[in-house]
Image 1 (cartoon, rainbow, N blue to C red):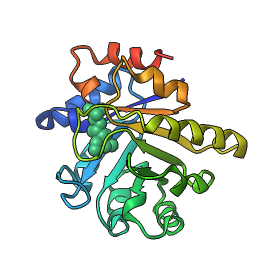
Image 2 (cartoon, rainbow, N blue to C red):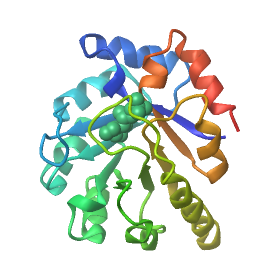
Image 3 (tube, rainbow, N blue to C red):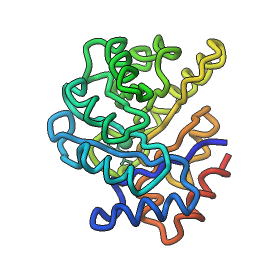
Length: 216
Ligand code: DX5
Ligand code: ZN
């Protein structure tokens, strides 16, 4: 059964703690926190202080997705604010082993994300070191974009590798996931589904989360 991680990028920023409590109540497994710096992606969202506020609002794991340049400079701040998973972009770091070691040292679980245009072979060798591999199914920066099927073969390859390597790495997909396409990523072997506008744009969070979870 896949985990459902609503992305608060699509939530009402004027009522973030209420929104987070509402999706927790509605059965969400994780909270996906989209951090953007206006350099790595053409948008600016939130920083460690917001993660700290979210930590006070929910007991769900905080899945922090760093769409920022030089993420190593901010790992301690996000870890100290209460991040559980910290995911850096393969395109933004020189040395993934070093990034994972630093995230580990901060007491968080290390993740790596790849954009739709990035080869899955850039991260598949890390299937044992990483706690999470995030396959983007949209170009990062904004919610409510259209799902890009290029993510599917990447997820299939990683799911097969994970089995062969007996790895506990979680495979996550992020971007354009709706109740009517989530079955494709579940069949491809994903463990965690990020959904922003599908959840926060719906009138019944619990029904949407449940429909996603049982779509396989
Ligand atoms: C995009 C973010 C995604 C996005 C998902 O840069 O990483 O997490 O918020 O939003 P939806 O589910 O609306 O595509
Ligand atoms: Zn994200």
